[in-house]
Length: 444
Ligand code: HEC
Image (cartoon, rainbow, N blue to C red; front, side, top):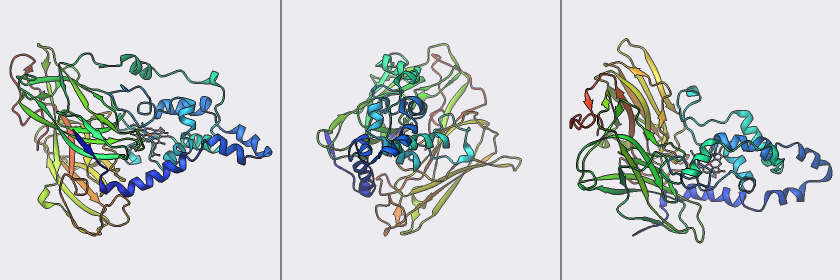
């Protein structure tokens, strides 16, 4: 059993977060407000938007996939607290106002130009932000429970399933040992192995779905069997589409971010389960889903001490026609921005994804609603920026040159992408044929 202590690079960010929490929990907001509200101000307070009338609909639509108390929400990931009841939300009204005002919640990092491009975007309209802030500033009134919106279907389904929403998995992968977090720990990033034995998976198989069930404090997962961020739905491969999971014995590494509210009695041991369902024999796999990692090679990466906008690029030429499914840029504490641009064979140039303010705390996968069609011969250019100056509040040490490495105080430079090939393949589930290992799975 391993016990994690708070990781040093995050101390500064933690102090800031703690300051918010202390401020936000200084006392029940309604009590504070009652103290300062004089008789003629009380009328203004009653004009404030109410929880049931105006706030809860916004929470249902924009926050509830993550901030709910069912442990099995949409793939099994939970935010540290629920916001579904009046009491849950009222106690955190100020924190909610500051989180939406400063754009920390809901978490999303793509540039405004991409509005509508990605299926999993999370954006609050200005009037929704204003409503949440006015509610908090107006004393967080409850309003009339009779006007509360109906509980959304996905919350009912999550509470009812209390298990695998896709059915019993054919293969369950979990860490070789539980991971334990101390009372005072808020955030930690670690790589943990899960062994797939030959008994568990004697032969290669085609994947139909991947769903996660997590213990407490799991914030996000990055792994070769598919990652998961809070609020993500299970990954399901439609008819004709699939990717291969290779036979054991082998270890699958899970890059984990654990996160909880710190404090006495919050120590917890946790694990994950990745539940995989295989395709039924006979299904024709016409399109192998694969991916590649646009990796800025470790020996090239050197971010000078103090540099506020160091950048590095890499180009990738598509050798066959594909449809792009998703991108996921990955850096560490000094990550600043990311850009994916494409030049088509006819010379036309397009920005496919711009992340102007990369948030280290959030490893978003940007999933295209309409997958861009990329003809063979197109060139993708992937560029990353890092801020190694003292102006980056996450920077653990602006006085050192930084190289590539796994710990969060070194840097990573990955540009994962996932695509499906348009050239028809002729695999049939159960015929024993699989693409060669290079295809159908993430490259180096
Ligand atoms: C994708 C999942 C997700 C969604 C959607 C989401 N949150 Fe969060 N929220 C989290 C997680 C996880 C944390 C824990 C801290 C962190 O990772 O930043 C958090 C932390 C918070 C915090 C405390 C920390 C802070 O930054 O102040 C507040 C307040 C909050 N969320 C409010 C909201 C509100 C309001 C919405 C909807 C408008 C929302 N969240 C939507 C996952 C989510």
